[in-house]
Amino acid sequence: MPHTKPVLAVFASFSGSGGVERMLVNLIRGLVDLGQPVELLLVRAEGPHLERLPPEVRQIRLGVDHTQLAIPALARYLRRRRPAALLAAKDRAGRAAVIARALAGTDTRLVLRLGTHLSTAMAERSALARWLRYAPIRVLYPRLDGIVAVSEGVAADTARIARLEPARIRVIRNPVITPELAAQAAAPCPHPWLADGAPPVILGAGRLQRQKDFPTLLRAFARVHTERPECRLMILGEGGGRARLERLARELGIAEAVALPGFQHNPYAFIARARQFVLSSAWEGSPNVLTEALALGVPAVATDCPSGPRELLDGGRYGPLVAVGDDQALARAMTATLEAPLPAATLRRAVAAYRQERSAAHYLEVLGLAD
Image (cartoon, rainbow, N blue to C red):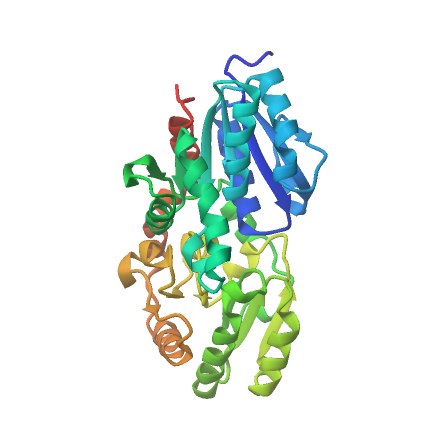
């Protein structure tokens, strides 16, 4: 049957197995479930998450490997297909979309989704590097028809950087909790540490890179392990920091109690069986894996980083918040949570706003496509 609804274009680059790609596929699945036709315009098309796209989503490769180089192809697409709206994922895609629409001369509604606390990510860069990143934002963001931020912290940060009125930015929670999450969590877990009756496992997850600050988690776990030698630590994910983490675990004398099993296609089977989840990040936009842990009823501890954990944990109501980089405070919070975990039902209620269908419906509102 032909589509009766106008087409929504989504412009993105899939370059790995990260949370942005996973959330974008979750969102697209939610939009399709609501009857919205979607065409996905891809700069890069790498990583496992593309396999999860619904078959009715038309994938269009733009034939370039950098977002800025995609501007001419995107402009041609907008002139030819004239979608009702275009959702751009991440800053560079949003800026490119503004230029492409101007070149195309169309009236396509442009909405940008932002998931990073940019000022924190840029904090260690030079003043010149920050200016080069912020100046185009200040010129181009006012030309967008809508901006969606994944947390209040990202919204406030974006408003400051772009010099926009806060009312221009809409906060929509990530589509983290999918209809299939419970079934994925119940699937068999391949790691023996998480078998029934095994010693308690503390879990972290994310790319093995500076943002996630897993060295602080290792140091905190070393303190916990001194008091609770039966505990083990597992960190899911892959990245350039693996060798450093393995070396640090050996130096701390905890190598035998630490596992780094790499990227997992179904991390939920691991998360659901952990005794505790720990987010040690230096910065976030809205930490999806923390949301998933709470949705699965797993007690959590997090750094009070910008931004997202404070909103998710309601200022500490649903799990302790500690200062970024403070392994002593993190260890105390981990021990306290192991000894007195919150009920699973309480944790699940805390993240009800992060359901896939609710998030997708809010995006349709911003995109001007709601019924």
